[in-house]
Length: 220
Ligand code: NI
Ligand code: MN
Image 1 (cartoon, rainbow, N blue to C red):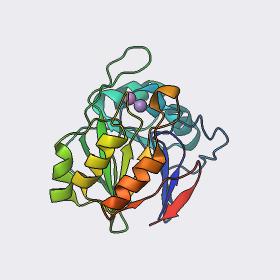
Image 2 (cartoon, rainbow, N blue to C red):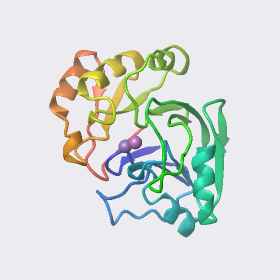
Image 3 (cartoon, protein in one colour):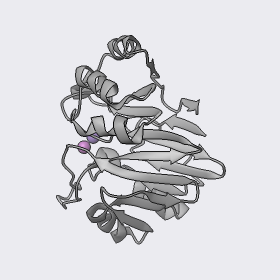
């Protein structure tokens, strides 16, 4: 499987013949080729996460998985949606996913309430990837280490709206994943972050920080 960074909190996972997008806000890679997308996961309704999801779903027929209220909001575009909530494992042809709590807010640009914000834990090809969404540091992250044991943690580090570097480093310790990837930084002036500090602090924990460039990918 390949995990590719599309800027901000947007990622692409490819596994077998499947292509999965998370929070496809694509301002940092406007020419990204989303053709062939099978599934889109949305962490919450803010425009920097909803991004191009409806347009991509219209063009590709991709299924959008999102918390019930956000899925309902997306269904106004006449696209395929899977309304979920924090709860049990969800099964897909390529693996399974569980939505987990994020501490944030969630609404669409027009003010529509779009349910609770979430993060997602993906289990694909025997590996577990946790995408935290927009969140502050919270003790639920200790449950991740104890119960879900992710191999990869993707964490916001930009501060202001989410965890900053200092708290993301604590989160990495609590979550326990060996590979830690930063997101949600340097897109806007308010969320500028020091990736060198992030890298050195993560290394002190004996973990591997992976700071991806736009459209750069790693193989897991
Ligand atoms: Ni947000
Ligand atoms: Mn955000």
